[in-house]
Length: 147
Image 1: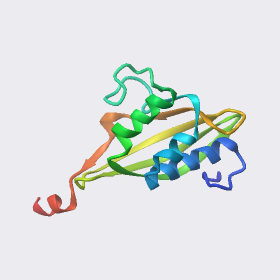
Image 2 (image 1 turned 180 degrees about the vertical axis):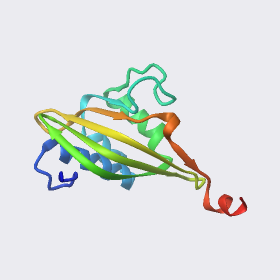
Image 3 (image 1 turned 90 degrees about the vertical axis):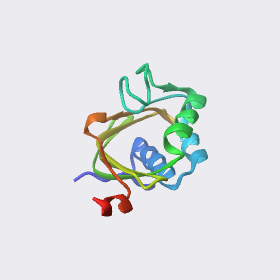
Image 4 (image 1 turned 45 degrees about the vertical axis):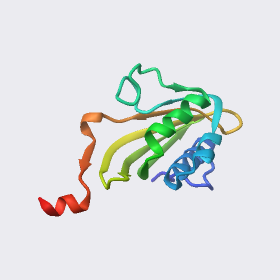
């Protein structure tokens, strides 16, 4: 069984993954942005999607900050990882991302979250693999009671 990301992980990409997921869960935009190299790219998900119509990713800190503002700020994302595989300067984390929105809506998706770091341990690439059509959406609990 592999070790999951933690602040004590031996692998630098795994530590960076933990810093990223921890900052997202706490809603700490500054810590999340500080974890990236200046020329980093975020592809979440990889390819064309509603979050990235061009499929080219969000490049550079300004674009990554806009990604936070549009997709992370208004929600409470929480990761539940089952496995983590680290090789070279990369770490692939496999698990579920559950996101609760201000209106109570909950989404869940299964994915692979790949972090690549530079020699300083900064994230130069975050690539996530998940399918929009496999994301599940659950109405707020109050709405479920009406069903």
